Image (cartoon, rainbow, N blue to C red; front, side, top):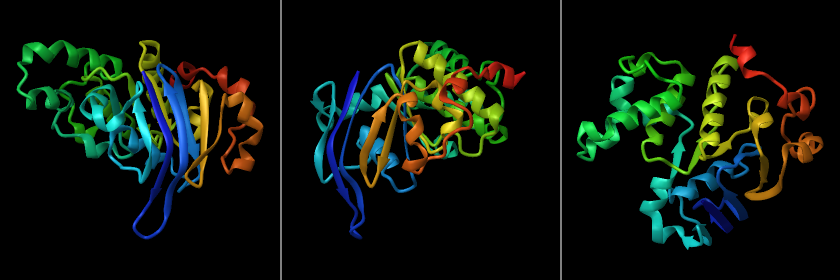
Length: 251
C-alpha cells in the first residue's frame, strides 16, 4: 500500500497554521516513527489519513487515488489507535470489545470467532477473553485497541502517542506486538515524541516542525541532529538501542 500526503495546508478558524505544505509518502510494511515537538502537526497529519481532518489545499492519495474517492476502502485498510485507548473501548470484557464491530454489523458469530481469536493472539491478549476492560493496564488497553483494529485486516496501523503512561514493561509488550504485525506484512506508523521506547525498531524517522516535514531518513542518519530538532535523544547510540533485548527487560 502506498499512502501519500501531498503539500497539505491547514489553517484553523483562529488563524493558527496547522499544516504548512506537509508532504510524506508511506509504503507498507515499513515501521515509521513520526515525531516533532508539541504543536508540530504530527497528529493532525496522521488524522488526514482516514479523512478525520480536511486540508484547505493539497491532496491525500491511496495507491494513486484521491482519498475522498475511496474513503470507505481507506478506513478498512488503515486503522488508527487513538492517544487515549479508553475512547475506543466499547465492550465490558476483552472479547466483547473485540467482537463489537462485527457483531454490530450483523455478522454471525461463527464467521468472526476465529478472526477474534487471531487478533487477540497477535495483540498478546490470548486468554484475556473474560477480563474486564476497566481492569486492564494502560498497555493492555492499547493492545486491546490494536486487537479490535486488526479485525479489518488493516495494511497500515497508525498509533498516536502509544507510549504515554507506559512503563518499560508495558512499552516492551506493545513494541513486541507492533514488530509481530510488521513481520506479518502490516505497516506501522507511530506518532510520538517518546523516541526512547521505539526508535531502535524503526526503519525510518520523520520529523515535523511548524506543520511541515523537515527531516526524513533512517534513525542512524538523523541521530546527531535530534537535539537540534528539539527532540530528546535516547542515551547511548542508535546502534546500542538496536541491540536492546526487550525480552530481557520483561524477564
